[in-house]
Every structure is written in C-alpha cells, then in structure tokens.
Image (cartoon, rainbow, N blue to C red):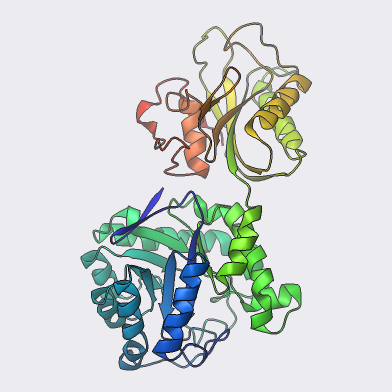
Length: 436
C-alpha cells in the first residue's frame, strides 16, 4: 500500500520513520530543547542523518492539561523550520490541530498534515480536500485540556477503530484520495494506562481499517508506568521496543524521538508471511457436524503454527466456506488466512507447514483433491522466487475467492511482494462465504 504525501510516496509495507521535532517550550518529553529555529534545524538534520524519512514539526504541546497556544504564536514557532527543511528536500509533517497553521505550513512546503483532533474541524477538512498533502487522522477523546478526565470506553479498540474509519471516510467524501490517508489510534490521548496498553497490543485491528497505521508511543507516560521509568528521556530503549512491537502488529509509520535507537531496534523486525489454510475432510462424531470438524482441523493447524520457532501469529481471518476449485467431485471446504511474523526462511517454513499437514493426515494422492489440512504460503515479505518446490508469491492467489476474501479481511489493499495489488476482480474460482 502506498502513502501519497504531496510529491513524496512511501511504501507502507516497510517501516517509515517519522522523527519528532517539538519546537515548543513545554512538551512533556523535550520541552525547550529545540524552541529556537537554529537548534531545531540542527536536530532535524541529525534525525534525517540517523534515518528519519519524515520530520514531524509541532509548535503546540498537546500533553494532558497543556495550555492552548494562539495560532499566531504557533505559526511563529514552526514556519521558519518547516520552510527551511522543505527547501532542503526533506519531507515535513506539520503536527497541528489548527487549520490556519496547517494552511501556512503547506504553503511553506509541508507535505503532511498530522491532526491530533482527527480532522473534526470543518475548516481542517476543507483544507485537506484542497491540498495534496498526506494526512494523519488521530483519535483523541476530548481535547488536551480534558482528555484525561476519566476517559471511558466499552471497548477501546473497537471504538477507536470505528472512529478512525468514519473520519477517514469523511475525508474521502470530501474529495480526498484514500492513498493520502493514514490513521493513528492515539495512545495516551484520552485513554487510561490500561486502555492505552490494550490499544497498543492490538494494532492489527487498526490495520483492518484499511489505511497505513501510525504508531506514536515514544516516551509516553504508559511506557514510564509499564517499564518503571520516570524520566521521559530515559524511555528511548523501551519506546523503540514498543514501536517494534507495534510494527510487527502492522503499524508502518513510526513516530519517534530517538531515531538512531529505533533504527537499531528495527534490525530485529521479522518479515510478515500470509498463509492460506483449508480443510474439507474431518472425522466427526455425528452427521451434520462436518463444518465444525473442518474448522477443528484448521484450529489444530493454527495451534501447531503457534509453536513454530522465532515466529508469532499476528492475525487470523474469519472462517470461510467455499465451493471446491479445480477438482469438483469433493466436499465443500473451510478456509482461513493467517498473518505471521517469522525469522524462518521460506524453505524452512515450507518444510514445517508440510510437517503440520502430515501430522493431520494430509493425503496427496489426488491433485487439488480432498484434504484434512492444506497450508499454502501465499506471500512472504520481500520474497519473489520460483523454484521446484516453492513459488512466491503463490501464483494462484488472485483467482481464488476462498483466498482473496479472508486475505483482504485482515490486510485490506494488500500488495504482494511482486508489487501486485490483491483484489476480488479476478477471483472466479472457489466461491466463498464467511461463516457466522
């Protein structure tokens, strides 16, 4: 999936590092360090040298209880910095909730508008439609003055995801190309410690909304509470680890204070893999329980996938029942797609998947015929190959309805390693319907 930000284009299959530049006297993490243009520019250039692809400039502290800043003062703080960095060919994001500030900064060369209030202001919505800037839609309950006054949710993950979906759709209805939109669940903004932890441990749910996902956890209070680190400046290692976790769960735009620390930590990032699972043979105790038996077979396979070394299941689609494809004289299938992070090589993973199939009684006597369990490697991040035993991406993904539907459920607008966009347009075989 591409994220289009004015003349800049980012591939959200790979981590995109956004360095934080607070030109404010009162930010919780670095207030006053970069409130002169000279200091701010030196720091921004160092972050770019360390590997930041975007510099996010903010002129108003949005920490809990922060006093509001006039638009004139905010512009005074940020405009020279934005203009200078943009003139040097750097992708600049303006972190603001004020339409006038955003407008002035876009005119000065900013390529991204990062709005912590989620484009709720009609003027900000109109500006978004008038520009070609990239947009970050963030969730915040209330405003910086009120957001930590007893935030309440019945289901914080579902409610934040629904909000972001609706705000992104509002932008699209206003004429914004969806390729320009990214979403930020807003950890710590109108969330308690436990709500924030629940949010950041479920970033895969925000990937399902269908836009690139931002993670902005750097130096935040919840990290101090979780890791027992009171000083925000001492939270950089923990911030990098939390950002890595969010990245493995699917976040792709990584907003961070200490860029060099994050880049070192990202060396641990494992490739993602999409696996297709199917079953149409299952032993059942009673007639009429065939579907449940097939689901049980797939769940057995998922259980064994959980035990793979240096691997972690990130997301699992719903179950889908499908018509047989290729070989018609057999029972209906139950299918699912699993998203995995793994340090295994493709060939090692293939061998382990085949061992799981064998343990569940897989019989290969009839090509495309009945099977207790089938596990296909559909897509392996960054891997395109064709060997005697393995072709990646899987050459038949696009024609299989029973693969495309569950795949797009957990990874909307997915682009394969060979740069092919997965869509339902060509999925003509094995018509599938979600179960339940």
